[in-house]
Length: 170
Image (cartoon, rainbow, N blue to C red; front, side):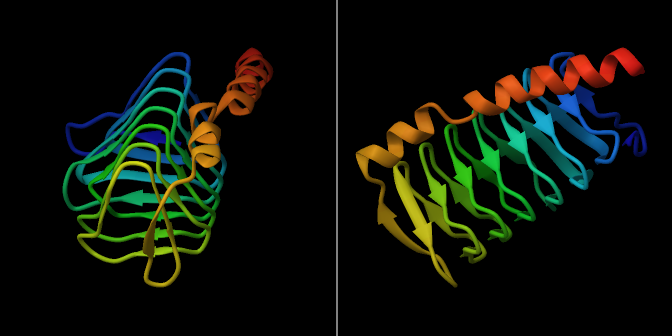
């Protein structure tokens, strides 16, 4: 469901896919070739949320913030992630069930491991991996960085299938 809130209406690129079972409300922008899957909630009621190009919000994520939030290009936000931070750079993977708390900032080419907790205000530098409760920052290996460079190619193909199948029925 896509809804306006007050005088703010979500702005969704024509090439993006938003599942009919997702809930997107308010001051939200979703970029080209991005996807929002069933059960995801993106609430731009307190502040704006901008999602870049080729980024994926997987099933049952909650994205909400009290301050403007910017999510970069080629970001995958895994299943059941709770996102309440300020920024995610480009080419990032946020693992399933991770929790990103208020004012957290994640650089480019970062992996936040499944189940990880980013404490309020945590700053993750470029090329880092964070694991644990609370999260501990480690340098990202070159193999993991290479994986992030190709992040989303399988999803790009999947989104085209979703759009073809479901837009024909609308």
